[in-house]
Length: 305
Image (cartoon, rainbow, N blue to C red; front, side, top):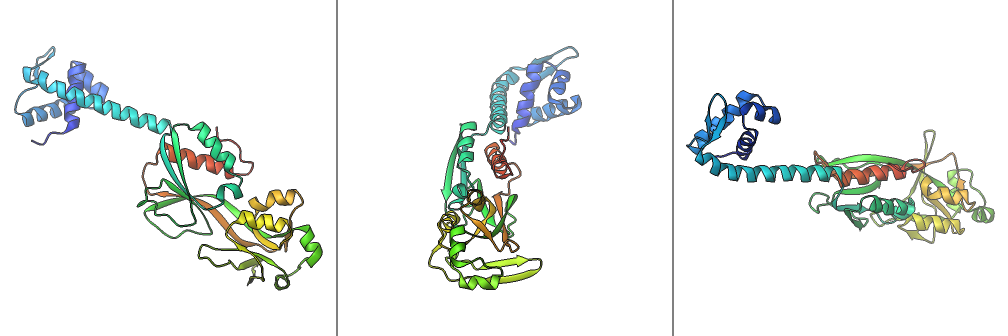
């Protein structure tokens, strides 16, 4: 017997309404559709559920017994709908997020993380801080934050661009006073580079661009690290020239600890992405996190109330 739960739920609504007309209005269905579906349900069950008269509906003895089951289904359906509505309105549950090392510190986003936890106390944050590229679907992550010029094509994922980070070269006034200020990229070979290690474990070369001109190279250096925050700190202490994005360099420049080197030349722009499984409906907790992160990264970092 191939019974459909929604037909039993409809039967419960008809019984509660007391008429096909009122049930059709409450369900938003044509009266003829309601009557046809109840008749089809009776045919599948092999007995009448309702005795129809011109003035009223009366449940048969069999209908009364079926109604007990139908009402349980109706209650469960309404409870599930209420739960889904509440979860969409109120972010809750566990949110698994993959973040690159140093991301929160380098972009001064720890206050954002604290604010998110305070504003959404029903969300349990599980942060995976790792340079590896996690498999969001297989490892059941809700989202990953990635910093890259571009992302590989993957039809199973969706990506939202949050902010573009302009990059340039910076050094401390003390370093430039000791070693001189380069006026062309070729002069960088005589300077000390603070090398940033890429995900493949090798120091990244500097690829400079200015109005269609290109220069690529990596001056000698004593230190290579995989933290842009540490690179900025070392540069501020006069240890060499560093390639930094504007968000990391800005506070150090404002405090007089760093100056732009070769200001007409830029390193490749990097983009902060939120990457999510390609679901049609994202949980409220994911949407809330992405919205607040986008606001925190925007100029001024105003609250998203």
